[in-house]
Amino acid sequence: MPEVRGLVRGPAVAVWLVLAIALLALPVLLAPLPAEAAVTEAAVTDPVADPVERIPTYDVVMTIRADGVVHVRETITYDFDVRGEHGIVLSVPYRRHNRLYDVRDVRTSSSTGAPARADTLKLLHDVQITVGNMGHRVHGRQAYVIEYDLAWAITPYADRDEFLWNAIGTYWDVPIGEAAVRVEAPVPLRHVGCLAGTATSYTRCLRDRDGPFAIDFTQTGLRPHEGVMIKVRLPKGAIVVPPPHYARPHWTGSWAGSVMLVLALGSVGLVARRPTPRPRVGEILIVLGTALVVLDVVDDVAARGLWAFSLGDGCLAGLALVIIGAAALGTYRFRAWERAAVTGRGD
Image (cartoon, rainbow, N blue to C red; front, top):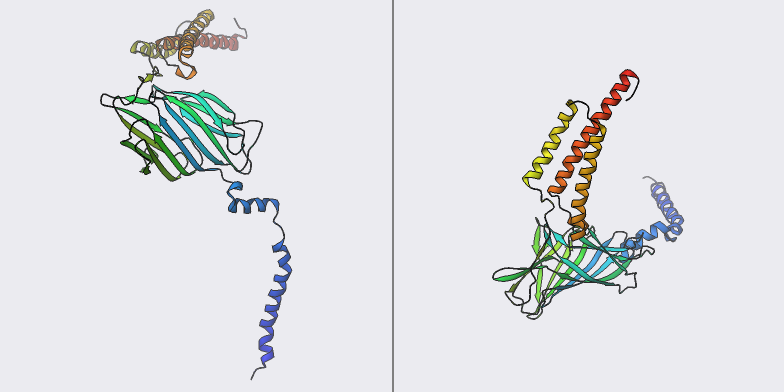
């Protein structure tokens, strides 16, 4: 019979070796985490230190007033990452296609004490409301309240008045945990709908009526660039609805202006085949064309703002003159360079 001591000796040594290694490693395992590891650990357990930016809650109250103006109050709770930011930027449309809206009386605050100065800027078709302070970074969870009045947003029809608006917007690059939208009106609300998501992928919001004059909608788990579209149908004459405002289309050129521009582009090849034009001709055409374009642009911008510019016949005629003038001046300079290369002399 084999000796029992010899059979037990190998496993016993292995067990003691494992225990010894565990005892040696215990102080290292119980030591404080390094700074970077501590941040990662806190980010998992503490939403205030979350390294991923997000919006935990987004609450919107839209109050339709009797004068047809919609008062909007947005309360945004924002989790900034560990690097921090100077604040948030809210985009409110003031133009969709040719329809104009008036965003006014902007007021901002912060219940968490974050800097809440508001700066507004019209950029492309949106009013950008920047809330914060460029000289101060905020971290963790902050709450902002943005209020403004929205005019010209209700559309009158023959038998009803409608308000169609994306309460959240689709410009947020971060996910939204829970969105809540409340619609209030001075008349009973009987036809109100809510869709959450995108134009091609959406779902109906959860709905809760709070009396005859208010309806609450909620939606959880919005991904970046998903919004909440609200549609309100009011009885005709229930409120005063100002007529909608429209901007000139970005393209107002007629067939005459378009043909002129096409002929100018086609003349580039003809100018290159004609006898060398004088440089003064090209310079005069460029100056006249530029003047026409500038006058057309200034007229639109002065009347309706920077982003209300429309491309009309004046601009098209100016562009045509600039193209022909540039072709003439370029032809002259090319042939002068060609002669200088052959003869060794310029003009």
